[in-house]
Image (cartoon, rainbow, N blue to C red; front, side):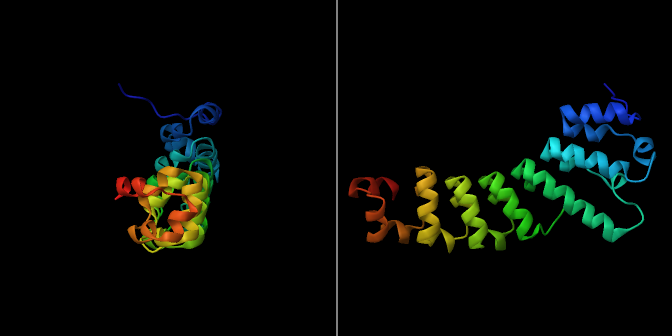
Length: 190
């Protein structure tokens, strides 16, 4: 079944209030009706559903100015990850930057999985991720899975995070006594 593209701005705005991914059905005619309409609709789309970022195309952005297009894409990604941190996974933008990554993990700690490796080794970003969901520890760098402060925060937020603590830290007396881990349960973790 073929679905027609939508030429009506009013209809498109109604659809975007229900599902941001409807932006994929905006016709080129609609996107060219007036300057900036494509970007306006794209913003509505990602604010309603952050995952709509994967439906954004060049026709929705400024055609004439490459620098402005890049800024528009970054703004759309910022809005998308604020609505749904997992939008980081489908982002058309590479090199997310610390600000975007931090916003994503604050909204959904598990978005750390889709962060670039240098961001998984950034203590501030990983702290935000494990604060939101302790299980995000699994995506932190080895160095930070050995950091007592981060691990303590992660395990306090969600005991399941203990599965991702570095073996060295897990066996340390200080860590075990801080979390009252019994010798028997240590064998189960190993």
